[in-house]
Image (cartoon, rainbow, N blue to C red; front, side, top):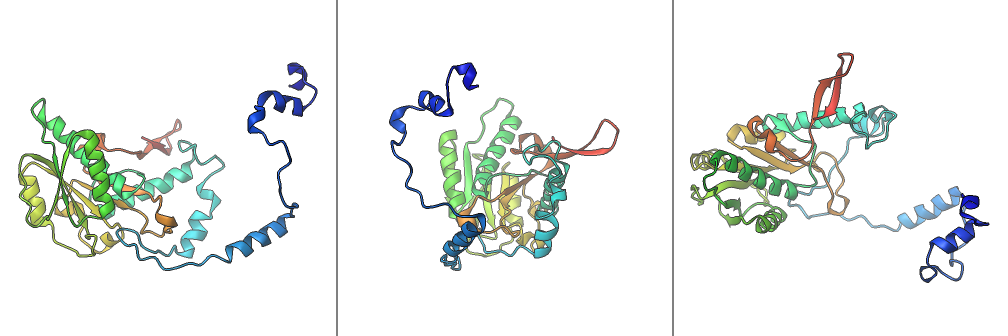
Length: 294
């Protein structure tokens, strides 16, 4: 390459390619190099100064334990990744199998027919659910006026309320935040969002509320704690049209607040309006089962 460019050395190429004003005129002031073992020992010494404190943030973020059997047999098992690079999801069958299992688990726990894999976080999923509700009502209106108000229960996590409000401003929606127990649904609203359990930890029976929301022609979004759904009634069973939340509760470390994968599940009738990616089961050219992004 140097011969083709008519240059004598790599230094000449750098002089021509990198502007002088952004280059240092003197060598970097770096300490003497270390061997690999010495560098690791130095890093361990620095890391040992960290102090780990208990987090009381709550509001959907909780300290977790990742079972060692999961770490050993899934996260540390190269068979799940295959020989392909991780971002080649279409041909990395192990990775797609993990995502398909995630989707299936979310469907089982939420009581809804279809789930994606996945979204950024619970707040983003709440905003996407609001948009899905509006798109569905827009399709049902067939050219007529579409409601532009969205109800959010005041006992939702504050970050969920804030992000829904931010997204609604750009879309021209009116977000009404209030007590779900006294809210009176009507045809000016296209959807409602509730938290299950609420941000203060209380668990409520939303069956009657879901019925009144449906009677007013609205769609119901439930932001749920996924781990709690192993014990609580599934949102789909009491009338939810969309269930969203964070998967952080299933052993993902807090990581200074994220990011954590969010789940998003809905009814089969609304699958064309669902954001995110889906892993589906198909067949390859030889007729064998194969997983794909669908």
